[in-house]
Image: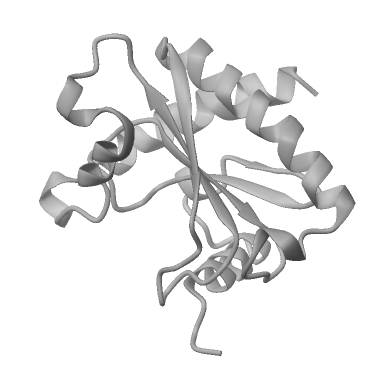
Length: 152
């Protein structure tokens, strides 16, 4: 296996070396983080805390927690950003991230048609100068963390 960036980021979280936006919330099996390479505020990612490359490899407990966490993260995004719904996507195809992770993206009420559905991906993998700033990401991270903690 090549280097898995997701596993490296999990190690950083375990060692207390992750920025706030990369350690929003940690459950027994999943980490909630904000995407680092996006121009879209509210692009969260649920990362399995152990390495697996396909959903079929999830344990029953991991899958059960995932379902509840997807709903809770969607509620937190709705509460904090006012989104009308969330998009949920999972591929685990990137050579750097061959690791089960779910994109949970806030879909805003006023979102332009050219940014709806799969078109939202034009906001991921953008150049550094177009990405959300750390301060903006950290502010949302604090709000999302607070909201998730109240749902426990």
